[in-house]
Amino acid sequence: MQLGIFAKTFARPSVEETLEAVAGAGLPAAQFNLSVLGLPTLPHAVPAEAIAATREAAARTGVGLAAISGAFNTAHPDPAVRKAGVARFPVLCEAASALDIPLITLSSGTRDPDDMWRYHPDNSSSAAWSDSRDSLAALAAIASEHGLKLAVEPEHTNVLATAALARRMLDEVGSPALGVVFDATNLIDPDQSTPDGTLSVITDAARLLGPDIVLGHAKELTSRRRPVPAGDGILPWDAIVDALDRAGFTGTLVIHGLSEADVGRAVRTLQGVLRDKHRT
Image 1 (cartoon, rainbow, N blue to C red):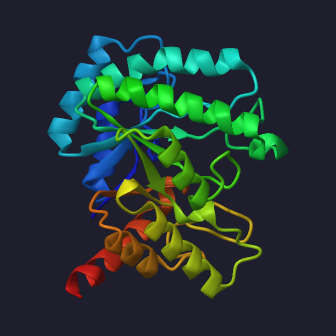
Image 2 (image 1 turned 180 degrees about the vertical axis):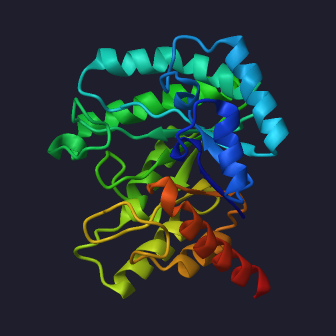
C-alpha cells in the first residue's frame, strides 16, 4: 500500500509544477484530474500537447498517476445529462490510456439535478437505482474496451449510500472492469456513530467489498465534516489500514479533502500508520 494525493490539492499554473508539489510533499503517487490541465473532467477532446506535457511531468518528477477522476452524475434525473456523460467517457478513457493511468473513479450519482454529491430523497427509489446501474454498466463496457478499470465510490449522499448497496451494484453490473473506492468518511455518520460503531462500519465494509476495492481515499471525518487533515478527526486510521490490508488491498491510499497547508500533517500521520503496519 502506498500514499497518494489528489493532484488538484495543489493549485499551480502548470501540470509540471503540480506534480513537483506532489513529489515535494513526499508522495509517490497522485489521483489526476483533467482540471489540472484547465479542462473539464469529461472533455470533448484532450489536446495532444496536454498529454505530452503530463507524461513528461510525471516522468521527470517520478510521480505515478494511480487514477484519474471521471465522475459525473450517473443518476441525474434528466436522461440527456446521463447520456452526455456516457457519450464523452471514451475521450477520458483514451486520455487515461495515453497517460498510462489504469483506473478511473466514478460517482453513483444522485437525483439532485444541481450537485452530484448532494443527497436527494429519491436516491433510494428503484428508478434512481436503475439509472445509476445502467450508466455504470455502460461505462464499464467502455472501460473494458480500453483495458481500464473503474472505481465507483460509495457515498452517503448518493445512490450507493452504503457498502451493502455497493456490493449489490457490483453483483448486478457483473463486470470485472468495475470496482470500488474505499473511503471510510463517506460511510459513517459522525453525529450518530460511536467509536465501536465506526470500527464496525469500517471492518464490515472492507470485508464485504474485499477484492473489489481498487483504490483507497484518505479523507478525515469531523462532526461537521470540516476539511481537516488525517489525524485531526475521529477516524481510526490504524484500523482503516488494517481493514484494507486484510481485504487484500495493495494499491494507493489517496489523501484529499484538505487544504494544501494541511498536507504535511496528513502525510506524517498516514506514513506513520503505514510504517507501524509494515513493522507488525
